[in-house]
Amino acid sequence: MAIPTSSLDAMTMHGPIAEPVPVPAARRRLRVFANPKAATGLVMLAIFAVLAVIGPWIAPFDPSQRGPDLVEPPSGAHWFGTTHLGQDIFSQVLVGTRSVIFVGFLAGLVAMGLYDAAGERNRALQPVALAVPFLAGVVLAVLGVANYPVGSGLTCVGA
View 1 (cartoon, rainbow, N blue to C red):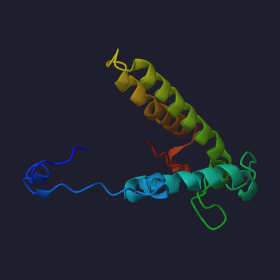
View 2: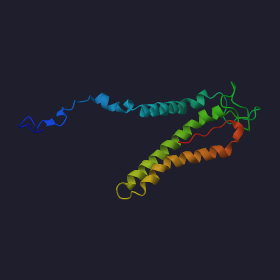
View 3: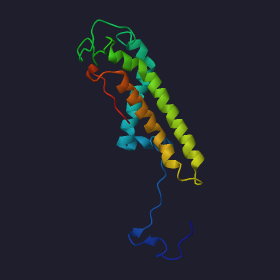
């Protein structure tokens, strides 16, 4: 920075130019938590990551075991209800979280690769690359709706 030769060189319309305050490295790494939306998303991702790891061990029922309770609504015994085969939906969600997280990260990696490959050369491919994770969510939602009857208590949530 040049040394001002007059008092006008170091001034702006709004007053003197302030020198930037150095930010400690620890605060720069945690900047993402200053945005409430980013912090909420990271907390939700952490919850699902924990469920993906411990889900098979805490599932109250075997997700593929058929039972006598056919198409039961949510209750104390079956938190999300049961399917038309008597399978517990909550247990299926807990056990299936691992594969869904894997598919989501894989779709994100593919989208990042396509977006990076498009770069500045081909702007037409960038929207397609950004839509890949959404399309994976749509495919999973359609498969979920196709495999379960409407009254089973299954709710598909898209991205």
